[in-house]
Length: 483
Image (cartoon, rainbow, N blue to C red; front, side, top):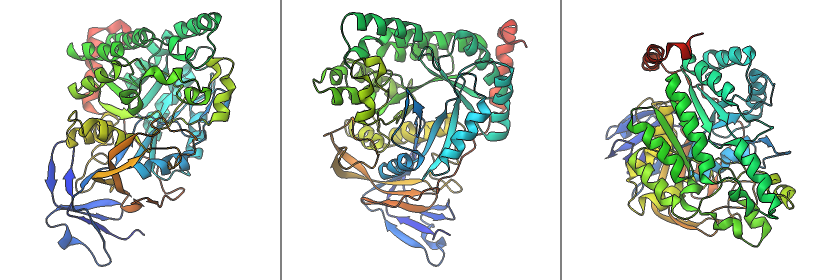
């Protein structure tokens, strides 16, 4: 039993407003908010002084890969070490990815990931990837939505000869998601073009990490984003585009939204502040450590992503936390296409976005809460349980010191990865305390994460509003959605 916790004197920041008052947490939930919270505190309540700080909903990272088997190896962070690192930075929930092998039943893969995640220190949910199509996949998608609380399905448009979806699979899966009240999500890169360009770049004698961005130029991402958006438009299903990294893909989302289509965009903290010069580092290990897909982009793309985040065309911020050590990355020393794709960042995300966003005037504190927590909770249907400080919500909170600072480094991070893509970056504004389900799990550098303390969070299918969208889609394109 966790003792009741009272946070006093902080400025409470939600996505819609900031206010003053106290917050009482009892049995994992927020029991009271405001001036009367202290008077309702039961005997034995622990008090935490939040004077001079902001109290915000805990961060929700909608895009992580813990314990992921990928490109012949497995990520360094498992569900315990990865979520523990997140808690140290103020992130109290993640949505990870179940990625079935080709021809593997979705339910079989889901059960495997659920088993791995039992060691999680923070709450978690899953997107489930559709990597192939059959009536069995159609059936498993229904089971996942109605029985297991999955309301989003991932589609990789890249990684040819592995987990890439063809258009037939996209159409069938998008249509099934619409029927179920679930959200399709896409990794938007044209896998055929990437495969061709990887070979062409290698023929030019470019084998190092600098070849990675050359094989995945912005238009490769833009083509896939436009194609996925067009398919979703015809079928009338909302769509969520993960890790938008370039001007062209962000603009594709903005254009679709301007004409009334329900398209949502996610941007990574790394893509907001890092450019592609990292791939030209003469040290192979440092350059390879930045290899992820889509890659970091030339200078200029970062500012545009910020503008689209400010404009509301990009909605969430994530990390794609997927850590490989130098020894694993070395598998691609002679061929950049063999470098395992992935970078870390779950611990650093909030501090980087606060420093580069709030401290520069790009975001207000409430907008920061929206893009790091609340919007994800709303888009994936766990709001107001998550992403909100209000009576009855889960007591997932971060006490934020706007004047606190630290220099980000692999030497001090909690992730098991041996590299930090934000290495040497000094940030102002950091988590001083993190509360997960009413329990203090991080306090001024003292990480108190417990293996297995996190719980699986079911995300219900979308309700009557989504049904209306589906009915409208059938009216507009009856032959496209008829069974």
